Length: 93
Image 1: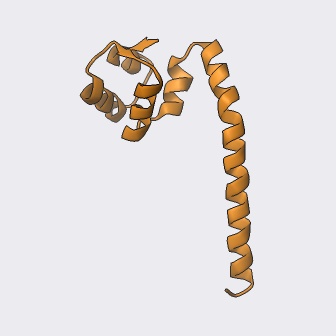
Image 2: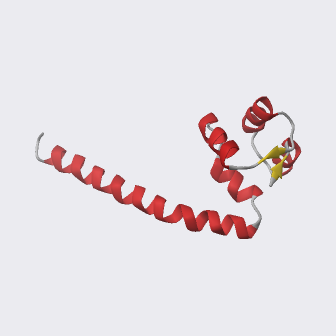
């Protein structure tokens, strides 16, 4: 899959994100692969927005299916940490 700056603009990407993409890869077309996705995430680009707005439906559905167990595990760990902190706070520690 390839993406261009024009596609980002047409799909409503915010200006700062478009500027980051153009600075990193030019106006495109940009090959979307594991390497460019990792680079995009490291730059602070909103990869969830990109997935939601740029991927064809079958690929987006696959993305969500793979992301769900990771996100669920993150939430479970986060709530456990919150519970531990709250327990220490209410016990006066």
